[in-house]
Length: 266
Image (cartoon, rainbow, N blue to C red):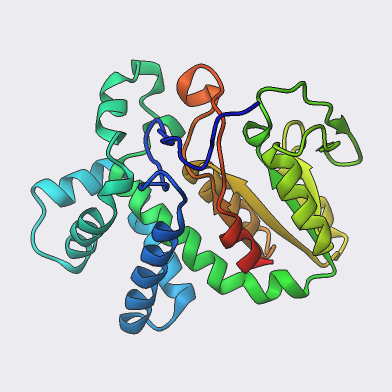
């Protein structure tokens, strides 16, 4: 049987949203409040999203902004986010120092400042596209295989677009999420082989009304959401409660996602 996943500490390689070990509800309340405050000052959410994406582009520039940059709105935002969100990203610094030279670029090298901006970007993207997502004719969800029950042999099978959960165990988070999605007429896939870029190009070219829900670790989720926006696909997403897969740790550890947040989107 899996461990008591409600009470066990959920350590992530760089971040964990379950700061109090029981759930990530407090994180979602905090990030929602931060986005609300930003929207009071920047009432156009699309422009705000573009600004956040541009600001997060260069981790080197972000670090320079924090350490030696002059007083500015950009610097004030980054410092405010560090004050509010650093409790969820305490392991980023030690992780970056441990990286091999070949890994110092790309997803594994995401900086703490970028994590904080990505958190805002995910929440803001959800607010912008939620109604379009709900009203779309065809809704797909792509789930990470690292949510599966690690104590059982996964029997997921390849279907039309990618792998589909077969409901091996009740404890499997992929199974639980898939059931919730199907209740809301959203087709869930375990993302393992699908070329999403090619899939989105083909579907949008055919004029299909398509929307997407994604679940992934924070850097990968942002990457996927940006891809959807590039192709004009309404997208919402939920970050995993921590990054605990083999890409980060070298082996898989059980993981979770916030079901209250999932239900609020559905």
